[in-house]
Image (cartoon, rainbow, N blue to C red; front, side, top):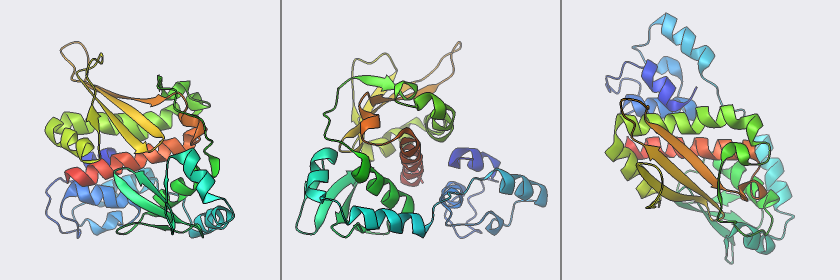
Length: 254
């Protein structure tokens, strides 16, 4: 269950009795694993039991990160900087991810200006480990056109395109402001109502297409990738990266 799906099940009173400012903030915290469902005192037992089964927690452990950190510490990060588009510094390499700068140090640790989620740390280290030095093709393709994309297309739609569509339907202005705050640039001349290019990582740009919908068609968001995206991250990692994007956009709009 993603943040939008969970939010729809909440009372939407924004009472803050759970310790979060709004129901949307609570939804984001639960999906990220930093809050528990039962801390909302207004969920009846039936709803709580139903949601407890549906909410999928991230199976991420410190052990997984520690292994990646150890492997990264053995790599030539200067060479990795070329493959990932990162900037080399005295302390390591700096990569911009979802509108925020992260420093991957030579020992494999990851730092930023504040708290860094474990998932972001893991995704950055996987990116460093797997990216090659290929150049972007400047050719937009759908997720299922990427290598093994057809296997994960259901998860991609659930974790990315459906939540983004719901965000635009709920508040187009807020959704636009959120993606713009992450560095998205509007792209004219697309077949959609509006379109933005956003770099999730220096070498992983996406094209977000939004159709407003009419009496015949429902509103819809489609996300396209550079055809070389699977050379920098495997499709499963891309799903989780886009999941982090929807969470970040939700936090920006709260």
